Image 1: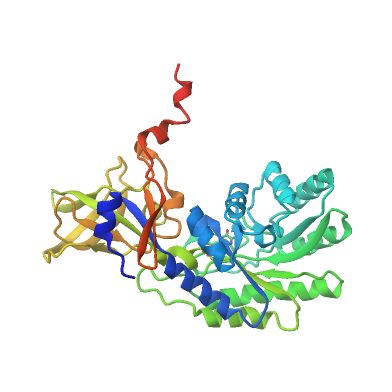
Image 2: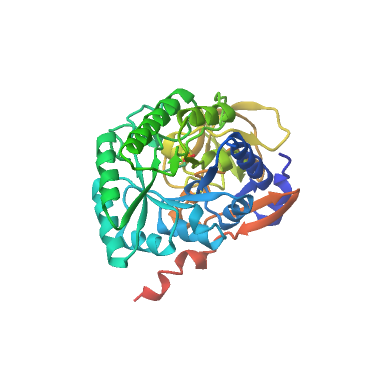
Length: 402
Ligand SMILES: *Cc1c(COP(=O)(O)O)cnc(C)c1O
């Protein structure tokens, strides 16, 4: 990746996110290619990065969309992802969201509880529609990842156990307003071991076979997302082996494979670039203070996540420091006890692997405008989201001042 961060800083100011669209293309194609032995749908998980230009780019490659709110469904539709490639997931869908999803006639609703299935049935009946249903099965497998991004154990709030799922499929089959079309599991994020995935896809494939035996035939087996990426020195799951494991589990079944990668597609396409404001030493401790903060990129604060930090200067006077933002919280840091070169005012710092769960988790905390987002494609850069101004931040409050 040869992105000229300095030039972009001059053109767009800092902090900013920049995404390499050619990298996104490669990641998408690599995964699609791995599943070529079968009909497949790569439904990109919008929540990782839902910038309209990012998803438009993926739409043009043929991607579908995995959405966790009706807002995401509308984003997907807006950039031309066809309804028949859109999936709506999430443990807490609101009535209005279910209604709109049915009106948009999307591919399927991923249902996560028996109570939710009843709601969907009632709403479909009111609308006189048939809801295409996929049920999220919780296979009770430990994905061996960070507890905050682990979803495949019964102790997590996601999905239903196998017996409940079976009863729900039977309910679908007996209802005029429900059509069972898919099965779904997603055991966690940033997965780096294949074994838990293998086990969970086996479990859901077995359920597909059991259902087939009672004449409930599903068309889609959705194996979720979660493929890990390199932040530091992780050993990754090989995409081809991943696809093989999934395809093997489906042996003898005439079913389309769906997968829902988010991080894998965009994580390493993105960099967060910030500039140095000051250095200071409190007692023994060195701090490098930058213009970006936890409101822009919260992963270090939220998950204690590691991001590789690169100082873009030629100084080789190295020492340990904390890299922190200007926000009034001790949790406002990008890295602790890392060795960085001595910096000067205005030196740029690139925080890598920030394309997923970066900008989308940003906020206006401390009345800081959300930063600019930039795309680089074919060596050319373009703005894909303007930096928010003070006026943007107060727009929805101003008229209410008494
Ligand atoms: C978050 C999520 C994904 C994407 O996860 P990644 O780790 O970013 O690949 C896929 N499916 C569902 C249901 C999700 O909640």
